[in-house]
Length: 425
Ligand code: GLY
Image (cartoon, rainbow, N blue to C red; front, side, top):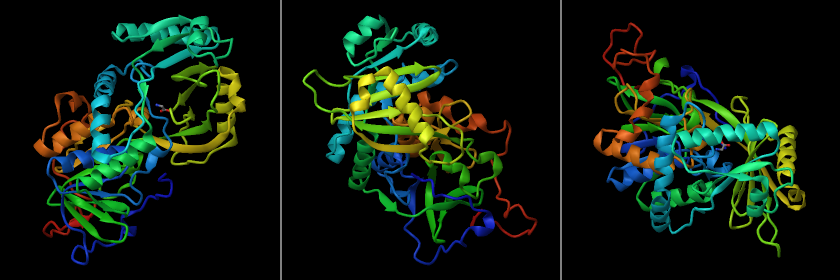
């Protein structure tokens, strides 16, 4: 996780040392090596651009915690119909994306077309689920209402108290850790350069983004710079206030258990989700025996502490859903950060500062949106145009109307009267 990053003021940024051992200039510089940064870098390199990723630990980040549900239908929310279109488009790309990435990396990513069952435990939960079903139908989505008995026939480990559920055969899963590892390998094989360092500031020269300054003072120059730092993008110095990505951290705690082989079949054969007394829970079973249970949703800044309360609530609700779960070994607890935007949708594409792009704000859908994000960013970097489907997610939707495309850093805006200088502003 990236919980060790700290905010720096401009005066704390090491002075740029552009002439002393600076890395080679790139066509594309991707700042942040989580799955979104890696897929962007991979697509950029595939299109023949010299591509560099800056990250102290590429392949880390939220992918090391996330469960990897590809839940376009079961995580549908009111008011997110535009996002639904992007989520469905990305879900549809997953089989080809998985095959291409596995071929390019030689690594499996745990893509599993297992489907999902969303269940209700009491009358209020059932009313919630009925509303979700109605919304799904209005959006033309496939989901089938089942009685409690029908749910238990599909998943015999479910509690007798399950009152009904929605069978959604189109919501699948991938393993985010294997996805990150495969993307890292695919990037390396495609010739992406990795700089294992932290970026502290965006460099602006003649009112264009020209790369970043690293924490050791080196400057990295680039034709185009992509910020794929999740919510940490808002901590980078050098951006005028209106360009700071409006992305905030939302903490999620997650558990990992090991399902034991049983003569009676698998513990669970598909993803199971539920609302338990208003709290959302999901259980994601992998073919390798791992069972991921998530997740809390906490607005606590960049805190990634695993708390007794978080673990207790997850186990309590999971036990209510599948009582046999207490027999399973608990192998891991963890906490990660979801990058949430004001409308819960990602920020994809150019900012109003020339040559500065964003690929962030994926919130609950980072793993799901990885294929479509890679395709959109690759197209943008190569042609200067976002594909039509990605255009509603431009970061410019949060930028003041009529704002000038000329940006000056606070330093450059001081009345020195000097010529524009390269700076880490
Ligand atoms: N999409 C699952 C989560 O955000 O917890």
